[in-house]
Structure formats: C-alpha cells, structure tokens
Image (cartoon, rainbow, N blue to C red; front, side):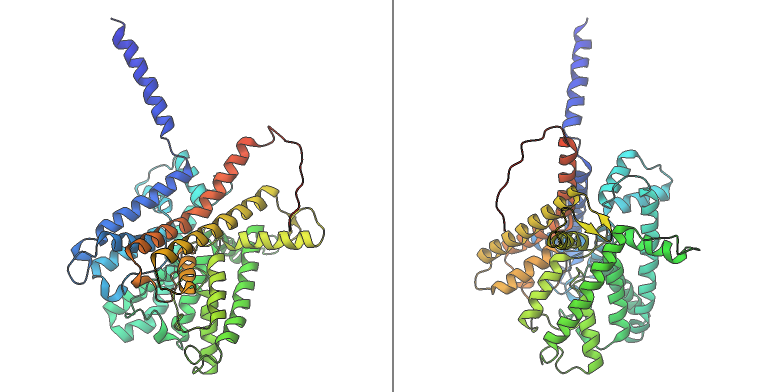
Length: 468
C-alpha cells in the first residue's frame, strides 16, 4: 500500500530535477526565442503565396531571408521589391519590427495590452535583452521603448511620404514610407526600390537621405540613450539633469566616428567617377554624410559600394565591425566596447593603472568583458571569412571579408556577393548574422555570470609574462 506513494515521491523528485536541468537561463531563452521567430518566419516565407512567381523559394532562401530580417541585417538573396509578394513583404516587415525591438519587448507589449502582470523571470529576460545592469525600472524602460519606437517610426513615415506619395500614389507611397521608416530605424537595410538599387536614385535628395540617415542614427544610439536624451530635453532644470556615463560615451564615440568617416569617405570618393566623381558639391557632401552613417549597421546606400575605392571599402569594414550602441537595433561589437578599449589604451599610455573615462574609473571586469567581446567577434569574422573562401571559389577575398563583416555587424551592405552565394555560403552567412545579433551580448553576460560565481573565492599566486 506504500508503493504508489513511494513512486509518487520518486516521480516528483525526478520531475523537479528534470525541470532544473532544462530550465534555460535568460541568455539561453533569448537565443531560443530569436531562433523560434526565425523558424516561424522562414516557414511563412517558404510558402508559395510569399513568392512573386507563385513557387516556394526553398527553405534555405527562406531561412536566410528570415534570419536577415529578424537580425535586422538586410542581406538578400533576391531583390525584395520583385522577389516577394505583398504577403511576403508584410512578413519581412513584421520580422524586422520584432527583430529591431526584440521579442521580449514584443512579449511585454502583448502582456501590457491584455493587462497581465510582468513576472520576475520576464523582468530578468528584459534586463538581459536590454543589456541593463539591474531589473529595476526595466518595465518602465520597455514602455518608453515601445512609445519612442512608434513615435519615431511614425514621424519618419510622414516625412518620407512627402516624397513617395507624389511618386507612387497614396497607397503605394504610404506603404513605401512605412516600410522604409521601420527598416531604417531598426537598422535593417531592406528596401523596395527594385533592381538592388537601394537609395541610389535618391543620392541628391536631401529629404529622403537625411530622413533615413537620422532614423538610422536614432535606432543605432540605443533606447537607453534615447530615453536619456528625452528626459534631458523635457527637464525643467537641465543643469541638475545630467547624462549617464553610458550615454556620454555612446554620443561621444558616435559623433567622432560619423565626423571622421564623413571626412575620409569624402576624400576617398571625391574624384571617383563610379561613385561621387560626377556629383555636384552638395550631392557629394550629402552622399558622404549618408555613407558615414549607413555602415553603422543600416545597410542602405546611395552610391554603388562595389564601385567604391579600396580605402572606402576597408573603412566601411571597420565601421561595420564597430556597429552601434548596446540595447539598440544595431549590431557589431558596439561603440561603448570600442570606446572602453580606446580609453584603456590611452590610460595605459599615460601611465595609469586603471581605465578612466570622463573622470570616472571603469571596473576591471567591464574592461575584460570588452576585450572578450572584441576578441571573440574578430574570431567569428575571421572564421567566417575562411569558411566562405572554401565554399565560394573564385571570389575576391575583399568581397568575402566585406560580406562576412556585414553579416556579423548586421549591416546589410554588400559588394554584390549575396545573390551568388552557394547553399553552404548562405547557411554560413545566416549563422554569422545570428551570432552577430546575439553573440557578443550573450558572451558578455556569460562572462559576467562566471565572474560573479568565482568572485574572490580563490586567488592564485601572481605570475608575469612578457607581452607587446
């Protein structure tokens, strides 16, 4: 008579152990969530209704496009305007929006709409997704993110409609405005201009290029910085309202990168007849400004990247690798990671033992995390380039390195290699896009968690090695 009770107890213990074993941490949940969204999007895009020719595009092409949309990259195997139906374009737009905001933000939005309480586990996931240090205020930050995103994308769509509605009519014009506003703010780089043209027909159009350029910048600054800017702008006493160190560093490095790349690109392409050589002075400045912004994970272009000079291509690779800000729609190693490394070098050159930024000391674990993210990211790009060199025979290595870095930085710029990729190459690039969207963040959190678990329990004797 006691056997059933004993078995019941054993089953409960076994179930508890199984639940503990397969209970994913926040970083793993984010990876699984993004993977599930990509898979669902790929299934929809593989339907005949999504393809303009009425036939399935194949699962590899569908998974590649879904990954590019969710990871807000913009690399495409076929021209978006002619390759997909309205249904297919709608799926891509939805995936871009989910990928740009993050699936946890979308989940929170649904929970708020139905009036459901946000649990502690969901708050931890939101903290991980938004790259915050604590769970305090993450729900409020998420609400602000949703409101800011809808407001900015609406303003962008209204501005773009002034150009697209007269060109295409009300229905198509508004659709174009909304699609490109969402794609620009989410730093996705998908366009509906046709024939892989991106924005080459609008190189001298200040309204289109400046509107999309500002949307790219706002999306790449990060939601934390946007909230900081909004609170500073609306504060009654701006003297007492100060930016956080994170916002200061983000704005500082972003400004330097945009200004420096603008000057360099203008110099490199000024006399290039294939790009800006035949432009007027104003068009050259406008194009140089736009291309100082778009490599920061946006993917739009107003001149042909394939016809640009070697220095411009190499500079673009560097900018794509750096990317935008944390908790933004951008990819790359992030400007704050780059900033921490640069200030660490300056601090060492000035004989300081610790990294100092704007009269603040940066903890050693953050410096180590920045080094780890940069090192692993570089390893991913190098490994991806080597693999593509094997699968894409006869392709120039610059094209391969450019494509790999664009995929990792979730940029979407290409020298024309993407449509000609082999099936193996498409899978490799899709995997790199996925790593680029989640890898550095996941690595940083994993390193931080490991450091917390081992913190100060064991200290080994100090040893020295020669470096440099």
